[in-house]
Length: 247
Image (tube, rainbow, N blue to C red):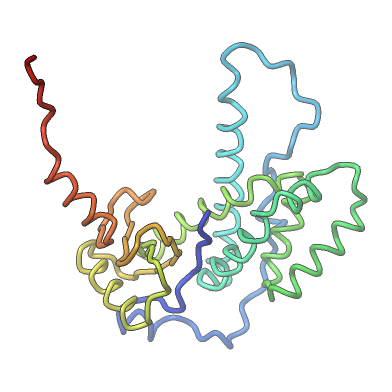
């Protein structure tokens, strides 16, 4: 699976950029644990599953992820750190993509002290904000490490809604230059009317050359400028109908 990488810039209007708080400003303190009171925890002894219950765990996980994301977004908005928080969560998403990490944190037999040591290591190496570290501790205490990717996705939806941001995923064979990414971002902004555009990039050698751009909720819109697409179109034009020969 190709790894996603956040592009090094965010396209936004000059007025919005001027109005955003400086990165050096100290945010007001806020506790995620306080905002997260009442969040659902993992039930270690679930009732016997009945017919028709197979979809319930997924629905429960989606609801839990939305609850965590909403609570975290409220803290980040209060602190004025939405931009930094979405960046922190993208770091956590990569870390928790490792099944071994998820299994370690969700294992009830692992002592909490060992989990705390790993959380501290992650916080230090990833330079996480204090309220994001608090969020991670709450997730671990509730044995919800498995839904961290869903929480990140839900938080990004909230962030995009609050900031008028359109996220576009660019897939290419080689990493595109910054000026090329900027032009793509401007094109997406023009098509969508978004206030801001954030780009994620990934590599896929099967495209042969060129690139694709996915945007819209769940990547429902696609711009395909790949050589693979052109080859497929040319091949379809030269397809001949089946001919039945009479003997």
